[in-house]
Image 1 (spheres, rainbow, N blue to C red):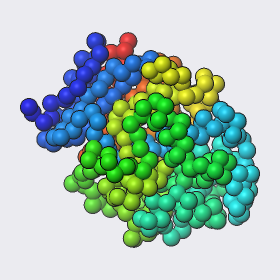
Image 2 (image 1 turned 120 degrees about the horizontal axis):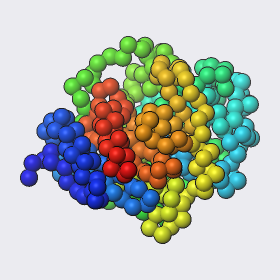
Image 3 (image 1 turned 90 degrees about the vertical axis):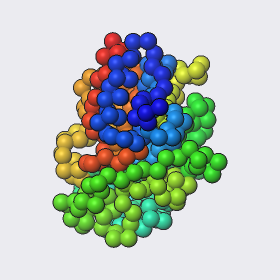
Image 4 (image 1 turned 120 degrees about the vertical axis):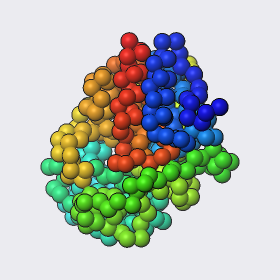
Amino acid sequence: MIENTPQGTVADGFDSVRDTFAAITAAEGTGYPAQVVAYRHGERVVDLWTGPGITGESLFGAYSASKGAAHLVVAKLVQDGVLDLDQRVSHYWPEFAVHGKRHITLRELLSHQAGLVGADTGFTLEELADDQVVAARLGAQRPYWRPGRAFGYHALVVAALSGEVVRRATGQTIQRLFTEYVSAPYAVDFHFGLPDDLEYRFVPTLPTEQQGETSAQGPNSLSGIAFNRNNPHGPQVWELPNLEVIRKQGPASIGGVASADGLARMYAAAIGTLDGVAPLLEPETVAAVGQLHSVGYDLVNRSQKAFTAGFHATSEYYPVLGQGSFGHSGAGGQQAFADPRNGIAFGYTRGRFPFPPGPGRDSELLIPAIYAAAR
């Protein structure tokens, strides 16, 4: 069997998605590890994988797609009245109310408007792996811009901050509540803190040839601070899931481990009935988390971006999606989202780090193919 030949199944009418995936894997070359899964109205219609030793149950680093998983918990707590998006963060976390942060709301925090993209001296690996350490450092720090007046991607830290709000309000970590609310009741193959008995399923991320290239943005720029380049001893982003302390502690911004099915299934569960279990989120909550909050120039990425409260505004990146679609991509090429208007949930993972980082041509080809088949 040729290792780049896609394996798995597609529903009737979705054969073109297999063809698109085959073209992507051929272009990537020998040994390319990847998975793609899609659900439509709660039914899995695409379940494909490729690469040596890869199956549908292989687990990959989720990178920033972890933020979407964490913020499904926040959405559920808002729905249940435990959290209020328009309440001040300092209401839940009194120590946060220093250096001009007293009036920052949870809504502003989730939509990357708080100005706390990183620490002045960066984080060590051990610090970055510990959400409570990250939250304590940033909670005592002055914002890099006036909160609410601009936005910039809190790449490695936003779910440590929102997770601290969750911990203060509930007494539980956001990771534990994800298991309780999402992964256990819906059989979602997404893990914050990979158990030892599942390590054999983990696929390490492979670097690209361009991995050593230096960023044009200095280590003490906003981008350098946000991606922890201001700490010369900190880990590189591409290697994060390969580091045991990240996999075991599961920091909520970057430390999840998942299959493509896990990514797609958590969003299918968020918006619709799944295997007879009622949706995680009610329609009003789904509409609220899909509402645009921060749109325009991102001070960290230095480009046009769009965020909702805790998620990417995914329909702004893929025009074929319905309005109000929400999800989160990852630097390793991951993409995952829910499209409530069309009843579609999507997950894509890959084991070769892309250059430039983030979702690229793969998702740009696969997503339209899935929507064309669904029509």
